[in-house]
Amino acid sequence: MTNAVSFTAVSRHFGSVRAVDDVDLEIGEGEFFAMLGPSGSGKTTCLRLIAGFEQPTSGQIRIFGEAVEGIPPYRRNVNTVFQDYALFPHLRIIDNVAYGLMVRGVGRAERHRLAEEALALVELPGYGDRRTGQLSGGQRQRVALARALVNKPRVLLLDEPLGALDQKLREQMQEELKSLQKALGITFVFVTHDQGEALSMADRIAVFNQGRIMQVGSPEDIYRRPNSRFVADFVGASNVLPPDFTGTGKWSSLRPEAIRLTSSGGKPARVAWHSFLGGQTRVVLDSQGQRLNMLLPSTEPAPQDGATVRIRWNDQDIHLMDDDR
Amino acid sequence: MTVQAAIVSPKRVGPAGELSDSLWRNPRFLLLLLLTPPLLWLGVIYLGSLFALLAQSFFSIDEFSGLINREPTLKTYRELFVPANLDILIRTVSMAAMVTIAAAAVAFPVAYFAARYATGRWKAVFYLGIMLPLWSSYLVKVYAWKLILAKEGILNWLVGKLHLTWLLDAYLQAPLIGGNSLSVSYTGTFLVFLYVWLPFMILPVQASLERVPASLIEASGDLGAAPGQTLRHVLLPLALPGIVAGSIFTFSLTLGDYIIPQIIGSSRLFIGQAVYAHQGTAGNIPLAAAFTVVPVLIMGIYLYAAKRLGAFDAL
Picture (cartoon, rainbow over the protein chains, first blue to last red):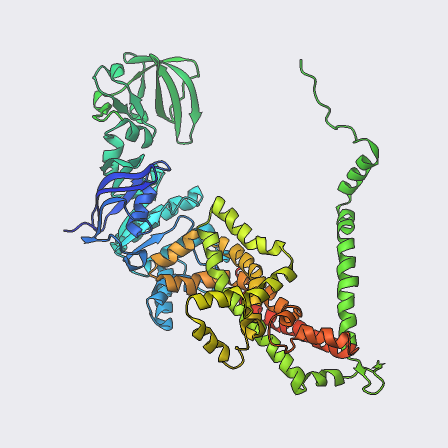
């Protein structure tokens, strides 16, 4: 089976800045693929390389097996949902959604029918006559989605599409995007800096740092078995432990929820401070000069700041990392 | 222990302090103070003289005595439609339309470059390049163009050097647009109008293109629109308010100008020259006023049509 998108040694340099640096990547057909990383890590540039807004400095990009070097965006059968939605302010919603069909020469009645269908798909039926200014952020996001999907792209690119939404709407949209992707079977490539979003939605995640991919794997892999200090630290505030703390000779990671309080045995630690997070309490500990984060269910009483407690964890929760970046 | 600041600091000394406080308490009074002078200027002096002019156009002149008859009548307006005067109107309006269309066509690429690609130093060069011609006197520029376009001028010399004199001569043979030389042809008038009003088109178009987010252009391409389609369906509609604003300048400035066609061009009259002649030597103020009403009316219709076409929807 050919991959939906494949990168072979792709680099994109802007002057002396290596925005994307020698990246190899395979995205399978029908996959929900997330590109995760801090801002400036090269994830958005990778997305723009697929869309065709940027051309690689070196290396090769294939979309469904076809080399796309020198192919302009308007000849690529991929569509993008932009971070700022990029809806056309001078067009009605229906004409925004029908835009891709219009420029391909689909007749007015037909394209409006298809656009209305796409609007129904994103649960905005009958919104066609409105102007973009009359919609809320969440509704604009859905219009942007409908406008891309109406073209039946082989790959849908989403650039931080939930970034501008509030928490509640975001969770709802995460669910909807996921089920939409399942129903349509289109390959989704999703750029985000939010690890929670990537973990909950993606089939596979690529973690980016400084233009390079640090690790590619399933959410479970990335979360439980990070290969580097960067991934462990970036994906979910893990405790990154130096070699001499565990006596294993390698850097390792330990999930905050894997640490437990115990009455006897274990390691002594001092409570630096704690904060209430709702369902859980985050306790920051100091154990032999090593700072440790622990998550305690709120049902358990939180220890006092400054108190000395004993903590333990199972040895299998210590995950050794080969890469010490 | 630190000294604590008083909750309420004392009044500023002097009448200015008193004034600041009372103006702060009466924002409406401040607004009135700020608006009265400009409103007086606009309302009384500007609009007042405009209405006085409008009123004059409904008077008529007595052909025998040359005195103005203050009976309201449409006689003067009828006079606008005698062939000689109608020619002047058609000539001026067509020239203004041609200048406006050409200015928009020339201004768009320049404005697009400035809005999309020019940054830092290049933007400064752009503004300087656009504004610099506005710093020198209009008359100097027009006379400079007369020299450039004259038979003995630099343009003819250059054309001769390029062995293209035959082409220029053939062009000048053409009816209407031709003449003895470029400086006494409609083409010359057109070129100079285009040159002097171009900055007034470039600047608003550039401002409107600057407000178009780059992502809209990318989105259009992403959805399958070739660059020409993006221009037609996204860039032009969004730049339209700027183009309309610019065309108001180029169109109305050309309609009213009486110096350029006098210095460069065939000696046939434009509206401005007709107004000048009728209110001066001829002493026919009513006809001069009626001539003046024409551009006002045309601009009114133009703006209304632009609004109906949705030119201001994206504002």
